[in-house]
Image (cartoon, rainbow, N blue to C red; front, top):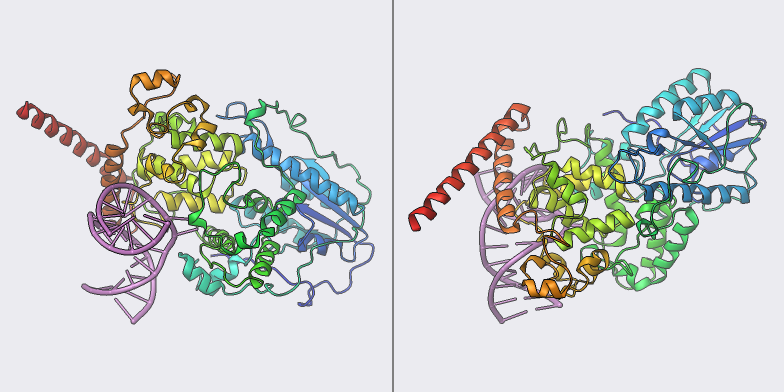
Amino acid sequence: MKLSSHHFRSLSSSGLPMAKMDPGSNSLMWFRKGLRIHDNPALEYAAKDSKHVYPVFVIDPRYMEPDPTAFSPGSARAGLNRIRFLLESLTDLDKSLKNLGSRLLVLKGEPSEIVIHCLKEWNINKLCFEFDTEPYYQALDDKIKSYASLVGIEIFSPVSHTLFNPAEIIQKNGGTPPLSYQSFIKVAGQPSWSSSCLSTSLSCLPPPGNLGSCTISEVPSLNDLGYEESEEDERTPIRGGESEALRRLSESIADKDWVANFEKPKGDPSAFLKPATTVLSPYLKFGCLSPRYFYQCIQEVQKNVKRHTSPPVSLLGQLLWRDFFYTVAFGTPNFDKMRGNRICKQIPWDSNDELLAAWRDARTGFPWIDAIMVQLRKWGWMHHLARHCVACFLTRGDLYVHWEKGRDVFERLLVDSDWAINNGNWLWLSCSSFFYQYNRIYSPISFGKKYDPNGNYIRHFLPVLKDMPKEYIYEPWCAPLSIQTKAKCIIGKDYPKPVVSHDSASKECRRRLAEAYELNKKQNGTVSEEDLKKLRRKLEEDKIQESKSKRLKQKSIG
DNA sequence: CCGCGGTTGAATCA
DNA sequence: TGATTCAACCGCGG
């Protein structure tokens, strides 16, 4: 485990190498996540004792270039909703920087090349950027740090995207990350800054100096990036930016009873007019909202009420979950894969592209599942429990498709898609890690019904079913033809028949998971590709055997 | 080896 | 609405 030397360092107390800066010095503030002014230690440090601060954002083609071959509008890695959210966040950041007498300098290209070019061109002495745990940024940052140290540029890369420093927690835990929430809490303890004052505002910023030969642009529009704006109804109602984040935050915490009594598992996944949660996740993902500021705001509310819920279910508990997954992800090589992932059960998932596409495109024939997938496509956001339902359905519950395939779809379409949290939850829901009770399968019929017996959620996101009587809306294939006709929705024509029978598919999944677990136990953590192949063959043979004997039985009865 | 805990299952019964 | 039952998993700590 490589530990980072760039821990979060408190500017006021630690006596850093900030002693005497030449007042003529130039700083480059490199924004990636952390798209905010409040509680932004990298920005604050960049501004300190500098004559010029260059606030930079690099449009990375890897992330932003349109990909017309993708299954939905967007780039190879991000759907249009998240790209739009990012651009809105950049516009808001630019506006805030302008209020401080500066501006956002937008450049385009491979980020390490661009940043290194800027360092040279602007004669930079200090390079500041938020520490990032994702493998892509780790590799990128290594490149830039080695260049900077070679030419003697000071680097400041504080941890401000999470409550704790993942590297520190891993160290405290003896070199590997804690793998349960409770052990994480025990190791983490109280955050060091929990009762100290965060810097939440800046009064002004030194302006950028001469821009030299660098090609700078304003924040681009979707059009500038080569995207066509699609139909109005595919647009998410979630708007990007720090201002919007802070507005939503104050709206959420204004209801003190709601904050104090928040219990995540009790939330209603079918609520969409007024979602059951804060919907602050996209803002945390891009750093439009500081998790530490959020934490302190919740603490402030809790101080002033008699009783409040506690982690893991409380609102504060949700922020700790986020840190939990960041820590495990940072300390686990190949966290986003099954193969080579120390904590991931090796399971011979099917690669059934038809079933995957049916799930992805909201045509499984299970209205509860399909409505959730439509909300994902249109909003880029669904309630946590709704995510559970569709993830369970795709993997261990019904379709037995590899969790990595579902992860890819979520990663692309979610506005709040976050590498550590998304992968962590797919590992969880597929019973590949953290959670192992594969017998507990969410019913695609009854789970939604208990929150929304009338099916309003389904009627909203799947208008083709809007006139289906509530008795049949969760299983319309059971409706008599006369009812289907009256509802103007013929199953198999206007809306698909179910791709599997939930009863038999879920039974089959349980059986396969049991076999896979047994294999993992027997091989004790060293399951080879060959072992998986063998098991896949065995399961296939068993299935054939079973259907043969079933047929025989039927024959003998008949 | 045993017992316990694990954010959020479903079906049944009161 | 809430408690119990069902069937029973893993990882961890003693």
